Length: 472
Length: 100
Image (cartoon, rainbow over the protein chains, first blue to last red):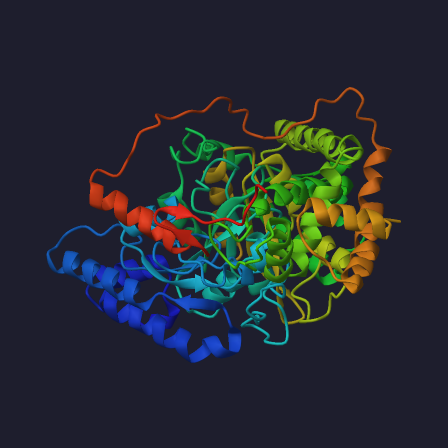
C-alpha cells in the first residue's frame, strides 16, 4: 500500500492491519513536506516534535490492542490562524510573526483527543483575507497541480497540502468561501459547516458572524470524518449550537429535489466551468432526482452585503492587535504613535484595506447607509435561501466562476473579491456547503458546490457522497 | 469619490498610519469598492429587520469558574500569556503613558 495514495479510511485500515505504523506514516508526510515545501510553500511551520510524540502514543495503543478511532494516527494539517499550543500562530501576518499560542483551539484539542497527528501549520492569506493566498506575509502558495497558478484562498496552504499528499486531511477557515474555493482550485473536497456547528474558540477571528472552521479531504468521506471529530457545542464559544447535525432519511434520497439557481449561471462564469457543472448536475438523473431551476433574485447583492458586513466585523476584531498584549510592537513612548506605527508596520495591504472599509462603513454618518442596510439585505438573502429549501432539498451551483487563475493575474482588489460570488450567500445565511471536484476545465479542476438547509450538514455530506459514487 | 481628508480621518479612527502614496491608493480602491456596494440602495428594505446573526441563539451563558485545578497550572498559563507581551513588568502588561 503506497503511503502517498492513502485516504483517511484506507490509512486507518492499514494501521489496524499493522501494514505500517503511525510513526512511519507521520515520517513519510514529514519527509515529503520537507522536500517540497520550499517550492509549494504550503507550510509555515512543521510541528515535527508534536507529530512524532502523538504518533508514538497511537502506535503504543495499537500494540496494546486498544481502539484508536477513525482518525487516530492520521496526519492532519492546521491553518495558521488556528491555535496549536506552544507553536506559532501567525495568521499569515507580520504582526503575529513570532506569536506563540498559549492554548489549543477547541478543534485542535478534539483532534488531539481523537489521536490525530498534527503535522504542521499551513500558509494562508493574511488574517484569512483573500482568495488566492497571495496576501500572505510569508510568500505565495503554489497550486500543486500547476505551480504557475494559485491554490485559491484564504486556506490555500491547507488545500495545497492535501492535494500534494503532505497530509491526509486539513483544517481551514471559511468566512466567505475560504475553504470551498481553494478546494475547488486544488481538486479536493472542502466543507464549510453550518454557522454554529464547529467551535471558533482558538480561531483568530476575522468576521465573527461568518467565520467557520472547515475540513479538507481527498474525498467526501475523509472530509466528513474530520468534521465528525471537531463538531459540536463548546462552552468556550457561545455561538455554537447544541444540536446534532441533521440528515434526511434514505427515503428523501429516493425522491431528491435538486434546486439549480439560475442567477449562478448568468454572466461571468467560465463556459467550460458551466459545462462541467451542468454535466455534474445531470448525473443526478441517474438516481431519478428531480432537477428544478429556481430563482434567488438577491444573489447579485450577496457580494456587496459581504463586503460591508465582513470588513465591519474585521475592523472590530483586528482592533486587538495594538502591540500591547502580544505581537509586533513599534514601541513609541506616545500611545497614539505606538498604535499608528505598530499597525502600519504590522498589517499588510489587504487587512489595512478591509479595516479601513469597515471603519468607514461603521463610522458616524455612514453606519445606517452601509452597515445597517447590509444587515437588512442579509436578512433578505437568508430568507430567500431558507424559503428555497421548502421547494427543493438541496441546491447545486458552481463553487467558483473560473478554475485556478495565474499567480499575479488579479492585481485589482475588486476583481479578486468577485471570485467569491458563489460562496458568499451560504456564508451570509449560515448554511452548510461543500465543494467537490466534478471534472476539469482545460487541465484544471472544477468544483461543484452543494448547499444544504441550515444544520443539515450530514445531509450535505450524504448528497456529496452520492455524487462521488455517481461520478466514478 | 472618497477624499484624502476622509481617508485620513478613517485611518486615525482605525489607528493605522498611512504614507501619502497609501492614502492616494486607498482613496481610489475604497471609492471603487464603495461604488460597487452602493448597488444595495436599489433594494427597498423599509420593512425589513436587519440580522446580525443567523442561529437565533440568545443569552448563552456559562459558569464563570476557574478551570485549571492547580496553582502551578495557573502559573504556567499566566506565564505563557505574559511571555507574549512586548513589554511587561512582574505580572503586568506594560503600556505607554496614558495620563499626563
